[in-house]
Length: 316
Image (cartoon, rainbow, N blue to C red; front, side, top):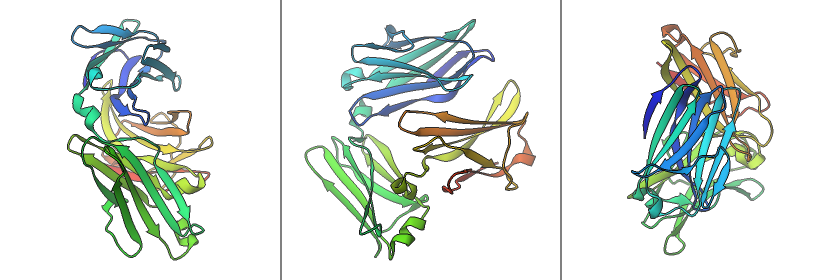
């Protein structure tokens, strides 16, 4: 993925463009950027850069474009391609302009992308035996044989008396996998705050299924681990943290600094909660300006309404 920017303070990319495949076989290319004014957006395809979509929100055949203003400055534009396949492989270009500024993202969709595993239904979280048995499962389609590796809180999870795995091929290109946890009591299972992941891979690529024990009760749970990175904006050093999570109701997010105290908005600190989709997926983001050695350390984020796992990250 390549960026070209002739930007001002009012127009800039915030994150690299993302490419994902949905359970219905469609693919989505998304760009996230900062724009104070309503921008003009053109999606182009191929070496001839044919314009395939120019509406902020519109449907043209198999293509659908969606523009979302998440807050006063943060926006996203998504190109969705229904029934995507090898013929849709190639170079996509997203031109975004506003006033005198212009930014461009180039996203290459390779043919191998369509040969990776992809989920054909949402990952599942099930309770059995009055909550004593926890089952986390997935179902994927893959033209090639897959491998599946499970982890708990980032560490490899071995088979044991209380941990079992089920992996099977259901038909020519469909695979099912599950992690089964057996606890001595339902209360022991309910008190667990671990995050489990399964990395599903074939020779062309990898996808990740993520699960939290909070999923069974509808409480907020982490969908993307907390990460921290350093950036420079207008000669100002900024530490940027973000974490993805799901919540069935409007969330409240609290960040803690390296001294364990809640962070409040200030001249240096900017906190955002961005709604990513209508099915309850959010991103919590915190920016710390004029970052320096005194700020290096561990930061935490959690919900006020529930004690979700207090994921933390260290920026050094």
